[in-house]
Image (tube, rainbow, N blue to C red; front, side):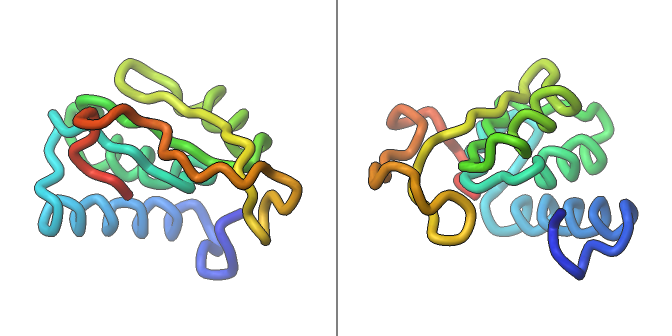
Length: 116
């Protein structure tokens, strides 16, 4: 689902944790952060957050993507307190060419600490 570089579940999780560590270093990500993951796909970053932080929690994780199948999977398998997923019908040449031209970020001003 994530491309050739995700040959197995361990690679998927390992790269997810690597991204979380990078966001800790570069963006100050903590368990209290409010994260907007624009283009979240199947929620790889959400998986990394759960695996990296011992509590598995985050202040707010909002995963957004244009692919309904991936968002449906994430909603079923990853939704928990502090984790939510939204499908948006935004045009994307590769994943949603018939989508709307709208480019509004699905968050109110001041409600996101980390945009990924």
